[in-house]
Image 1: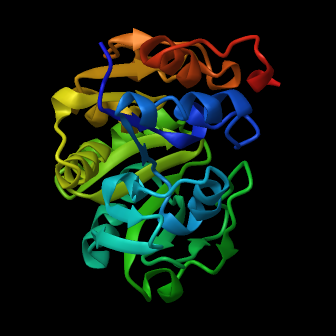
Image 2: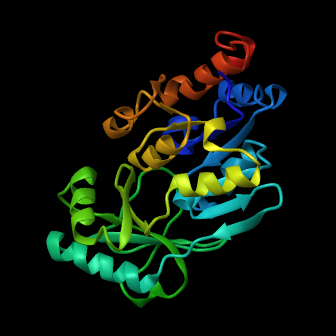
Length: 273
């Protein structure tokens, strides 16, 4: 069965280890339009941290960003919708978590098309995402935010997330989005809620949707969509609920499924160079 809406996570899913889409993945996405299907990006990154990648993809449509909190019209360079995190609630949640774990390193993402990622002392992040280091204090909370990311010097991500859910799961969503990325977001806001909003705007439903992902923050999206495809490099929790597991992002796992569903394999051809 082919689906009219193809929802893809970006990091660890559509993007390769170099954080770029491969030639094969670009070509596979090109199969969608002639087949009557639409691609929608669904990413944990807020808009400022994904804009350049989307431009590199020549992407013009809607992108669900910031864990579902931002609906971004790429072609118009315009935010259609943005869910803010209540800063008082975020600080209360953080206080509760730290009462169990001790002091955490944290970062915050400011809202808007040009909102910065501010990192407090001790917060580290692999990859190439830009961060501005600031002292832990009022500056972190001075402007509207869409999420808070926490790290612990000893606990791994899954343990930290479990402790955060126990301490503050009634105040915020707690999700593991990647290595060193345990995020606190507004309660009730997920990739599924953002994707459902975008789908309605396009006149599509969950039954029309196939979704691809690699981390626990993709679980709500998989539960919403008709078919969920986990990458081979995916977190075990996501694999356990997936309808299908494809090859890793390093092996163009998204492209492999799209080629199968939408007509014609590019594997081994000149487009894979």
